[in-house]
Image: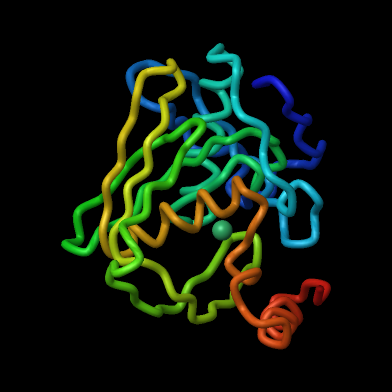
Length: 200
Ligand SMILES: [Zn+2]
């Protein structure tokens, strides 16, 4: 595990298909294992994640687990704390404004938003940790994230459209925020209740 991480909850594989598909992180990396998605209300989602300091086999395994867990859940992005791991890592496989897939893993990401006059759009947004619900959230329409990959090599992801929303949403997760935290209190309670979760 990367420094400062907590072990994932010992739960059985939730996938009805059993173990996840034999899908690694590419280039002969480790094979990922589908891990349970943590839901809103679990403390690991509501505090900032610890920066990664160890670029080791455990981190490569975490990336592989996150990629297969994201795909198994039909998500377009996943933050490490959504599988219960306290580490600043997210993965994404998300279309941009032109429909091109943006596939990335970013460790210790830093979000670089355009200036205050940047174009913004309000669209329905959902989250694997608030299953089945969506709500309108305003986001900038293009964003850049810099960081490193699991080997510590620099990574830069520049994205538009849904992929830009994904960058903002995943970095929010690593800062301990869910999209529902950007809603007003009444709407947040309503969305959480509709998802079968405790309002807060
Ligand atoms: Zn989310």
